[in-house]
Image (cartoon, rainbow, N blue to C red; front, side):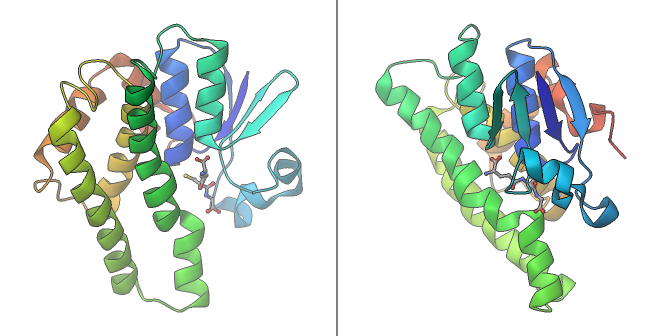
Length: 212
Ligand SMILES: N[C@@H](CCC(=O)N[C@@H](CS)C(=O)NCC(=O)O)C(=O)O
């Protein structure tokens, strides 16, 4: 299996965690999102992923984009150490939590959105920081309320799930832009516990070969 990603990309980080939880080996190909005008825009990478975003997973004949589709693919091919435990209702709740982060929050704070705000709309650094802070706050406030109902050691009880796989990269990303996590004590405690797990340490941005 081959994973194309970037050390600090939250979507790549999700896939790395899932691969680590499932103990799957892969070749890592770094795609630098800033160097050379952004290597995600280069023709060779565009062939793999016309969306010009990371990650992309290649498994034999299967080339996939979208981190959640990739993780669901891994889940179907390698169901041991499942990230979607429980009955249909529980699994749907876990997916919904994951989508709160991956579909509703991450696109608002993604690099290309910040680049468009700054370069095309001439938004200054202060206003850009307010933008990021606003969306992280809105998302984490809602997630903290959800966690009051669902959390144990991790987001859903005491087993690592897809919700945790999505939570950690987004909190890591928030720490760069809006680092005060005190209003979210459950989220913060779950994040700390997850960060200590070997699978999460292995997938951490700082442990990647392209980390700067
Ligand atoms: N929904 C996609 C999001 C992919 C995405 O936004 N990737 C970011 C890094 S986290 C990216 O490649 N950004 C490059 C850019 O904005 O030009 C997924 O989950 O895979």
